[in-house]
Amino acid sequence: MKANAHTRAVCRLALTCGIMAASIGTGLSQQSDIPRGTLGVDRDLVRVGSRSSLNWNIEYPAAIIDIVEVNPTGTIRPKKNLKMRVRVLGVAFQSGQTLLPIDASWSLNSGSWSSFFYGTSTAVNSSSVLIDRNVRKDDRIDFGARGWSGNGWLPFNHTRQTTQYVTVLGKGSSAPSYAPAYNQGSVKSFLRPYIDNSGKINIGDRDLIILWESSTARPGTTFFDMQDLVVLVSFE
Image (cartoon, rainbow, N blue to C red; front, side, top):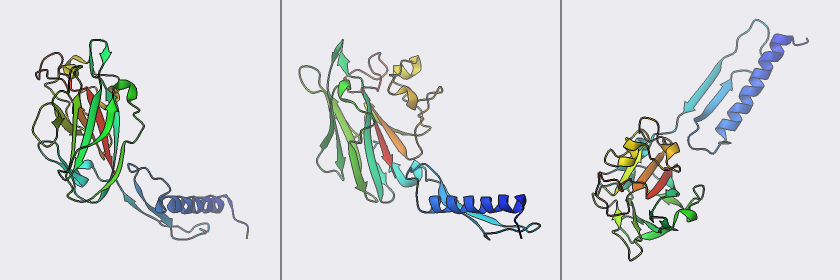
């Protein structure tokens, strides 16, 4: 018996579902922010007048609060074994027209500091992964940075201690109210895509953004803008 248009359409649906199920089930897409799961149909061929059943199981990616904990100082603690990738989004540290370098480091489980970025804004490649590391449940991950004044290194501000010179934020967090730049709208171009019109951080569900003020300016003053260094930390 020849299959009519209805039968052929359902067959195409079944074939499409099978392909989708294979693609999703085998992890064809490796992006961590895409829902994954399975989609199936209960038969290969559906005759006119009969019905077929579709079934699916979709797993949505966990939010950052479900996979890591950020303590009050900014230390990051994974709640499960994860892969961590770190990028520098931008550097805006200078004296007048003179660009000054930033030295950024990270530490695992209170160990020694390891530099992952050094340079001025010209050294930034925001697409470059500077740390690609598997981290384990309950590891303690800290980040720190310091700026060069032209005459010497300024204080090293890090997440092992409470300071307003470094802050760790997740999706939907408010940008620091004590940094005038965010209230005045003078957000640097490299940071602007990550802050929405209401001043909230706009990043992925599994991302954290770290902001630094590397000068010795007092919080709330004109030069204190928390944009001297911006780092993106992603987990999957």
